[in-house]
Amino acid sequence: MKGEQKPYQIGLLMGVFDMFHIGHLNLIRRAKERCEYLRVGVLSDELVKKFKDKYPVIPLDERMEILEAIRYVDEVVEINDDPSRIIEWNRRPFDCFFSGDDYRGNTYWDWEQGELRKLGADIEFFPYTQKQSTTKIRKKLEKDGE
Image (cartoon, rainbow, N blue to C red):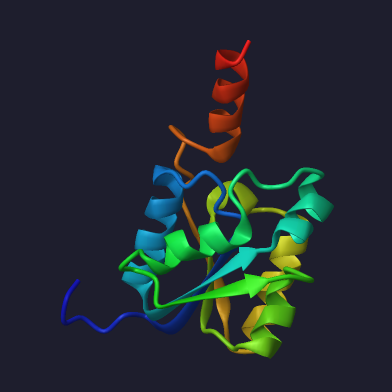
């Protein structure tokens, strides 16, 4: 894709990125293929606790440092309050938000996509990496610990 104009100038990903795995890397790589500048928002430990009722295994500062070391990532920012894509666009505008397709068809995400389009941005979904996820890693660790 070198030399080709990418469809978006600024792209955004947001997530927990706990226990970094190939699914995370695939998502980041695909997003960077679609934008010139990729910003990655990392949900704070407290925000993860609020939404998932558990803290990440890897602390925020380490998750951010891992992401900063990835060549596809241009900027890493902390998301410590509302992970709404609309709120984030108002803070730091972007042209496209990228996500795994496990959120495609979600009523709230469909609404947000419509609102982002009014702002001149969009949401693109990429195929979810079926072979690996943080949930699968957690289950394997629990099973191995028995």
